[in-house]
Length: 544
Image (cartoon, rainbow, N blue to C red; front, side, top):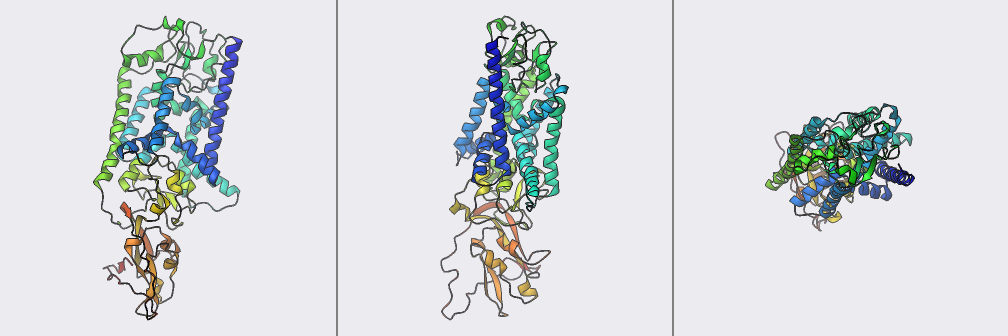
């Protein structure tokens, strides 16, 4: 390798490492810290993460490009286009979990060696992700999404550790959510310690898609078999474990552009750039575009700059899976369009504002935990069974922890996948996400003939208010049409262990009416305004 080429390789590697470190620091700061600067950092890094951006772009296309849809489409398209031209730089520098894996790999650098590709596993995982997304279980598919894994680990584990270090109260997270998020990332890092970026090359759906583009990219890392002396220096530092020095092969579908191999090659056989003149002579005869994906992985030098690559059947399976993903992601949108009854089912979890419907939310949410970490009241908590198997770790409101603040839009602003529609504050104030119910047999006004009024005092819309009852005590009355389901009444209720007031979620979120200007007007005789009460239900429970 010439001195000039060596300096260029070193500068490129430093630039890649510096960019990766900045992205990791920004993502960690945004997910763990609080404040405007942290919010900006989290939104910035989340905006270009491939899986949520692609999910949001598809949703925007299906819904006619709602708010932020154009940005999401541009981010996803830019990542794919850049990879198709310049190689897998997203994985090299812009993925926080990828950088964490590099750090773990550095600790285990003595164990690096070529690993055979597991293309059937990659195809199976990719098809499983497509199938789960089509079935409306995006949260289950998120267990192999690098952004969701990293975000949950930061929001649930690192943030909790930081709060403990500061002697602050923990945000009510369940031990199961914390343990599951931490175990998933630790497993990925353990695999990196033993075998480089094993997760990126075998499980990651973004890595599989970008790997195919990287194999055909005009500019990428290449191995010239004619110059290679099979010394093994490149394989000993390869974080993708994709270089087999003995047979002079580099698997471009697993190469993550770490550039570590460029600076250690003594002959300059490995370089980043377009195909060289000398390499063309070693290429097999021109074949069909589909077959050339495998040829590109094998090309260059005596045996080429790739691994045995993808077979025709494997490539078609992966391409077919991608097409199926684009079409099947329309299913949640069709389910939403068909509509669901806007009634509150007993015990149904309350979803965040902007979710619109249960079907749509479960089909779009990648359970990254970003909204949970940004929620100032910590009412958002990851579900553990409340939303079924397909909703594991999907955020829902836990009113025993807190309530949804009337003037807050943090969760919608933070959502990177479009699962939460961004509502302006005025629209959010009338977004009806649930409905309240009073159990007379538990309310102290009726059971103990004691004055209370905590529910009415905390209700931000006036849907719950106190009027003089038949016993002379102020009793709660309720107007369902102006209730937004924020849960302030439930959280304030002093009755334990079971609250006298509960809030159930809606299958289809609607718009609440605005309170009448005369809602709290006092009659001319000076008595409290009265409101009609519904008759008690058979179980002695009724809406206020």
